[in-house]
Length: 358
Ligand code: PHE
Image (tube, rainbow, N blue to C red):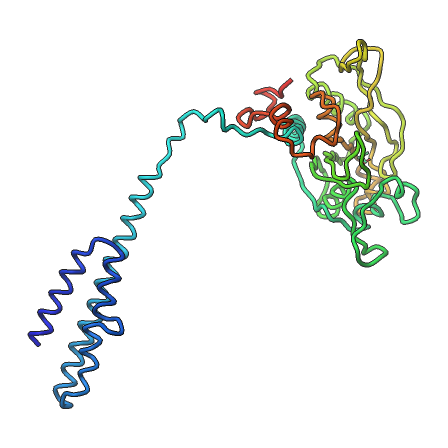
């Protein structure tokens, strides 16, 4: 018994005195591991007579569990203080200025999307996203583009391998399917914008197989063409930073809007360059129209009560025009020199009050 008491105080002292979690582990192995002292004493119990064995066994078990508890307690104290020390050590001063030589750049596509969202967000639109992989119904049929419709050919669709018919999956050719998803799953009124990637099998200086659009959709009881025009004229003036920017709407055709229009803004090409604003020329900028009643009905919305307008903005085109980027393919070449030249400071977040980089 005396032996055990002195072993107990010896072990408790060394647990107290351990300087690290590794020290504690060494103690555990030396005492309670396979070849440990306590383990050896446990094995020795077999040689004792039954009466002595019972009492000695109980004492030994108690010692073992007390030492194990002491080791555990010390270990968690140490883990806490190691974490505290690390937190102190890794503390960062967030008020320090950034190191300018390490500043990354925001890609003009991200920047342009942020600007569009900042302007339309201020007007009361909420941002919604949808899947890049779509089914035939959302990308085409519900938008009044049935299977045999010629507009399908114009979309140069990427089809995914799999079933034909309505279950066939495609890479969405426009952001308009998110109009359908929104109208199918909610109740009007709607006032949404949808930034996102879109895909068409096309590649040259003004087309890329992956590109970006921002879709807009407003549905309410009394939404009319005047709202569409006011909204888009305001948007273009804010985006290009030209307060008196001339605009016109030319009749056009999209299966999902009726009537449909193409919006042009004023520009001049004098002296070789393109300048947006008053001038003698027009530049096509986006497609828009009043939501076709058939589309509303396809989504279960009563077209005798509700009407709406929609528009689709091509982000690459907007970025090229605003920032004078001549070739669309360069957006996706990941050339760091290009990004340093055309990219934006991450600290300069576009907003209506803070400015939009014009
Ligand atoms: N979805 C059309 C396109 O990609 C653009 C558009 C959207 C036109 C909404 C009208 C209304 O070409």
